[in-house]
Length: 488
Image (cartoon, rainbow, N blue to C red; front, top):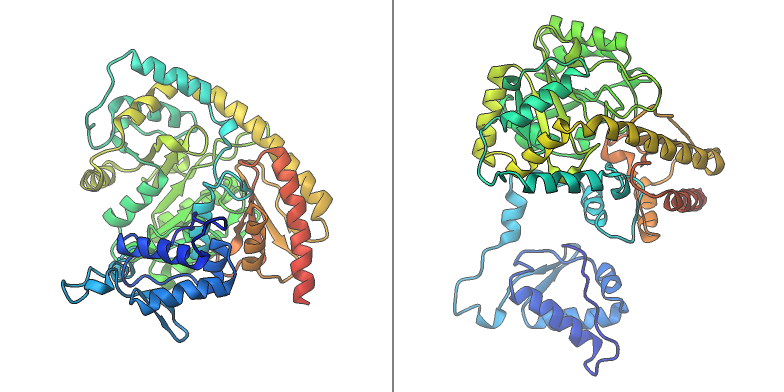
């Protein structure tokens, strides 16, 4: 159930419990709250309506007596009829809650569902968000870009399965600058990296296949592969990235079909896989027959004078690496433009699956992306973003030094969005998440990337403003100390 944004009116002549009863009855009879749906706890509902518990209980008792809801011992309260007074006149409505529970796609963890919802609350300080602040996005350039498109022939129809040739040609030239040779015929335009993962899971892997990946990993926070019946097995990491020495044993032990990696500014740890380890990984994967899925989302966001090591795909001479790139992390998440690079038969297979699911990415977004690269704006924008992100990273590191030095250890990322923080104390990260939320601070606890990461946080310096960042980091340090004191 989404957040309830209605409150009873204390100044009304209608008693509060009757207002609540009427509100809930309207939700049920309209079908918005479906038969079979479980209501939040009495405490949660009372807090949402901002009334005391006895007032809420009166409303629930009236709804129960009328046959709308029923409570079960230890099982909460459930909606049982949407029009109980007419239940004998017509068949009951479908139990949509049962359909929801039977769906094949896994639901997000409750924590992730809360994060996804609260990221749209303008009052929240978003200290875990994996996207650029609106003030860092190229608002003016994109406005000019669409003005230029408006003077041209606007593409309003469907495009070919692979994506427009104009955009694939621009992506091909863009990739050449980082050492990846990919003619347009080997590039598929997708609606962001997440769609690429969904297409790969549906089009290339058998149900029950096993995928190896870094532990922790971004993939643990989404269910693109698990919902398709894949198993994810984590490989240990160190300061140089994924530990290649374990790959062959894990491949043999789990009969793995694919290895997923974010070698450059890894999400969530910020780690960069060393050049030697990249070459060792390619040699090992080729020898044991294990293809690689490389996620290059952050590789353009370095902070030093030198770029990170080349992508795995740039070093690949045997066609063993599928490469996924995106515009979401640097230009605009709203454009929903990404790409997959791979052998032509693979790309054609994925394109066929894509046409079956959405009949091609937005033609307007593709035209805008082609114009963005073609106008030469990308390189300059990247330089600007690197400088601004470095300033934000330095600010967060200073705040960590000032307020967290006796609470945690952390990485110092050389690029990307994230700082991976490990607390000294064994406190409940779920409690920290909830307490922070009540204070208007949204964080990403480590357990959404690895269930065993019970002392970790992924802090993002990409979204919150500097003043917000300072206030939130100080408030979090106080909360950590408070929760620790309560737990000892």
